[in-house]
Image (cartoon, rainbow, N blue to C red; front, side, top):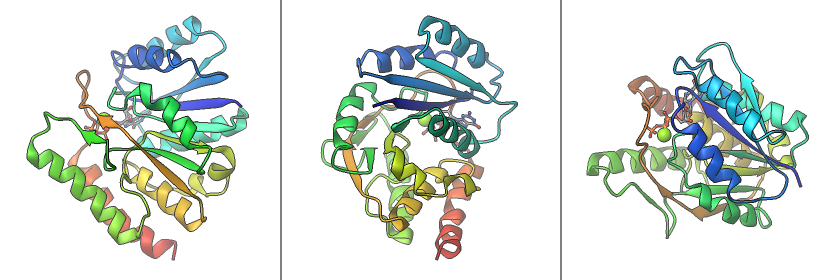
Length: 236
Ligand SMILES: Nc1nc2c(ncn2[C@@H]2O[C@H](COP(=O)(O)OP(=O)(O)OP(=O)(O)O)[C@@H](O)[C@H]2O)c(=O)[nH]1
Ligand SMILES: [Mg+2]
């Protein structure tokens, strides 16, 4: 069973080697990584090339011409993973917010569901204990907002730590998405729900990034707020 984990990167030169090493340290058979870099000014693309040489045959890199948003990077990467013959396709943030050691449990959950979701909002999961209350509130609100408006059957709708069965990803028109920021994650869940796919949520502890800068912006939050409504109308 070939697994390809897609990692979108923009200025993650310090984080990527740590993440990649930790993922391979899970010793999952036939496990591969596909880095999708948007020509990061901090040299993440070159760092990824170094990793490609280090983990020969197990890591590939897609170099894109410039920053085009998380959604576009994932569309490109997910398509490539399907074309490369993946049976299971993974997603994860590069900033070490998602715990690589939860990967085996996510994979195990895929035996009972089409999509396994690393979830902050199920028992046993959580968000960074040092987050101020407003940050916790914002994350919770964003999730609840999307979940309520779109009637989504899972608790963590915005997180990107996920594994998909190949057939599940093939069953949804993800390439048509016009979502730019993290609302892309919400859109995938909505499409999966409409396609009648099944979900399993696996608790994860989400740690704040310690290196590099967040790509989260007011614009991206705003996009999420209105796009949720647009999705509801568009796919009805
Ligand atoms: N290729 C590519 N990757 C991106 C882009 N924007 C964000 N990413 C990556 O997507 C992942 C999530 O981005 P973050 O900056 O951590 O944003 P976030 O997780 O939504 O926000 P935080 O809660 O602040 O961490 C990281 O791996 C980023 O490097 C982009 O335009 N292109
Ligand atoms: Mg992050």
